[in-house]
Image 1 (cartoon, each protein chain N blue to C red):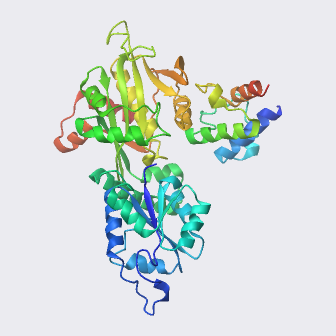
Image 2 (image 1 turned 180 degrees about the vertical axis):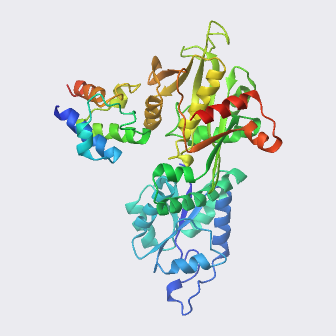
Image 3 (image 1 turned 30 degrees about the horizontal axis):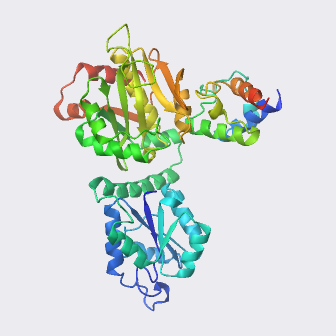
Length: 84
Length: 386
């Protein structure tokens, strides 16, 4: 797991107010809006703000339909691609 | 920015002299002009609050004073600086400092707030009275709807206080609020409020488009359009009309307004949400999801295959864009600069909000008249499935 994915998991734990160790262990395919994480729209907006602060990547400006917000892995892939 | 709150200094502004220095434990007689101004502001939907540099114990006197008792929302009485007091007020009310006016007779207090909270409009009492009389402070007319807005701020304080005391989970608290969302289609009487929503909503507004009232009036009578409205009540009070949408039945996916596929044309035409709005007044209760879910069920019941949504990606509506993604909407087409068309097919489970009981206009008439229609049986059956 590279720094992009580990950082995204840290931000995710923070915006969901969940135990970072637990979020760090979740499979990479865990759905963001699925029952395990149950990301709300407010927490999702905070996640994107956190990603922008940390990586300088404005996901919402580049991925208009926010399709990268599917799983931990798809978001990490998108940010990885954008960071280049 | 429309003025939503006037923050009053007390000593020398609302009444003569310094209350705490009086020999008796009573408040001085308020200036009639101040009381009249507060009443005029409330009628225009502007909340009155207080930032007074005094002993916090004065708050009880304020709450017990017959003339002033419930004139103020979240009054701040402390020895601290007034910019801090105003910061607490705007956070508590969930409004922007630029929607706030501060009035104080003391030039030092005015200068301090002006320096540290520049977005706040700072006035001496006479300036406030002059602007109020000239109608330049609050241009909005005194309407019943505006006056009820002040009641809602009070209800919101009661809600927040109850939430702090509640020890169960967030979901249990929301269920305990007894929220009922009454949904129906817009009538002419709803048009001013719909117009107000087009101007006042930002976070939960898909396109930010301004639709003139005449055009809106035309839509509610046009069978090709569906204009739903949603009203929310809970055990603390009522929120009024808090969400609406302009939905084109049987629309195509082109960028312009023309109806490409004739209604009931080839197979299952889509329904298209040209504008969706929900007031922040009911934030934190998942109202937008409940309204969207209901519109989707109506579209499916009418035989539509998909619900389409026009949305701009350059506005302050990121949370709404995430909400749509969470509800299963995906990209359909780019319709312009920063303009996108999203879509979701209407098969399978549609979004539902457990703590929001959905009631249709007919339900309310059922409660009154007992007549059940076919449509209500499906809606009622749908609710049982949850």
